[in-house]
Structure formats: C-alpha cells, structure tokens
Length: 124
Image (tube, rainbow, N blue to C red; front, top):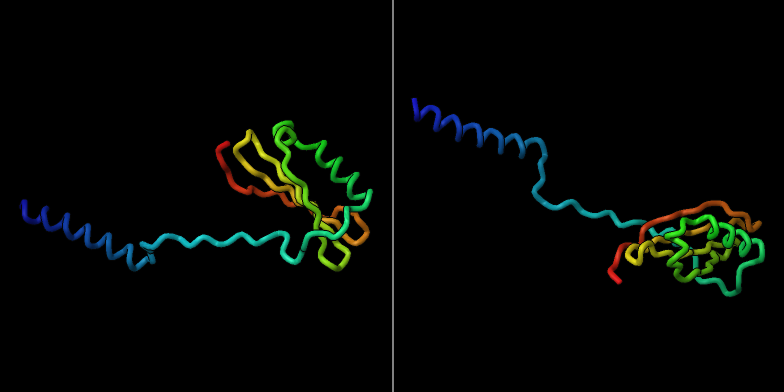
C-alpha cells in the first residue's frame, strides 16, 4: 500500500509538470515592452513659446499639487515642423520620483492633449 501512495505522489508531480508544459507555461522572463516616446517627431523649438502657450502652461502649473510644485524641474519647449508645439514640465515628488507633464498644442496654440508619465525614481 505504501508503494502505491509513493508512486501516486510521483505520478501527480509528473502530471502537473506535463500540464504546465502543455498549457504554455513559460520559464523565461517576460520581455518588457518599450514605452513609446510621446515626443517622437518633435525637436527643440528654435524660439520661445507664444504668449497664449505661456499663459496656458503657467495656469496648468498653478493647478498642480503642492508636492509637484515644490520640486519643479526644467521646462522644455518643442515643435514638430508642422506648426504644432509641445511643452514638457518636469516635476519631482518628495525629491524621489520624477514625473513629466507634456502639454501638446495644435497649430492655433490651443492645448490639444496632456500626457503625464513617470520618469522613474531616485534617492536624493
């Protein structure tokens, strides 16, 4: 009787391993999908933003949380050659996490879209 139990435990283990292989269980690490660059196609602008864009992004900054306003990083202005612009605002939260806010403007300098994403973390 002990041998039957011994073999049934072995059989169960082998059956479980076979099911994992058949069901597509992979032993390799998942591949990270690169995040697309939201500023692809844009390059550093050759001139400063228009007053309409300056006023809009200043208003946007005023609406950020106190933590984001506390550690403001550089602001960069971009253009794509078709009359559209983008403004990248860097903020640091608690001096540890970098966040980017990208404000996209159409040809009429009206804000068309906002993207906010994490740039990672660091220790200060």
